[in-house]
Image (cartoon, rainbow, N blue to C red; front, side, top):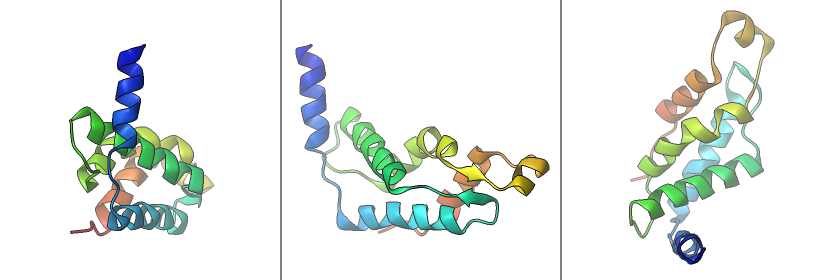
Length: 110
């Protein structure tokens, strides 16, 4: 539909600052270094997170993506992209919990 095409075009116009891109890369790096993660967020995962954050920003009418947009969509994008270490599974550590830890531990750009 025309409305969907217009919404998609609007999302493409949502700006992503270099600092925000670096923030996403930092989250991915933190996921790869997390003790309970065997396989962290991939490059494709980072791109999916960026796209979801842009959509979130666009839906609220913003012209640029904020760290809050990333935090809003991260629980929907990251958990199923992580491969947890066997001990994490045995201990009952959830991917959603790890995602929240990644967000809590990664410095937010100002």
